Amino acid sequence: MSSSRRAAPQATLREGLVVSAHGRHCVVETPEGERVICHPRGKRLTVVVGDRVRWLPSQDEGVIERIDERRNLLYRQDEVRTKSFAANLDQVLILVAAEPEFSEHQLARALIDSPGFQEFGLHHIDPMQLAAYMPDIKPHVAECRFYNCTHLHEPGCGVMAAVESATGAGGISAHRYKIYSDLFAELTGGG
Ligand SMILES: [Zn+2]
Image (cartoon, rainbow, N blue to C red):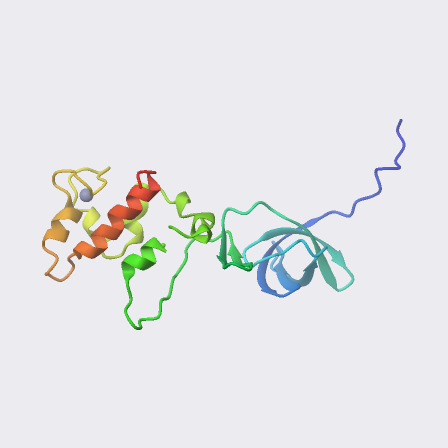
């Protein structure tokens, strides 16, 4: 049957990137750079900044029909509910109040143990690139004898040498090195 009963003309979905989200409304930027206020169709669809969406123009607003698959999602979770903040992140800057005592290590364990962190997806980081994400460790990687050094046990490792001479400027504190090795173990599934 060539009946067109089920082939109702479907308006073409347009692509867009959510650049801001306020409750049920958000601003979607088109590939052409045009910005359109949109709202998601249906209550179940929750969009966050960073979402790539498909939307339909509707008078002077747009209706988001669906969200493309997210590479990652940053959210906060407590006993009661989950609040999503952003999706498809390339980089996260974490700010921590410095009082009463700031524990980098706690933070690093929190940069892992919380479901939100897992979901956010530290796991997309190649463990061999981890050192590049830690500004105090990164410069010493160039001093390693082996290009594929994990900085955990190799001879001639510039990172381990910098930990041993941590008192000097540009050294790596034992504490920071511990964070590095813990994260490395998490990323490689060693734990
Ligand atoms: Zn090394």
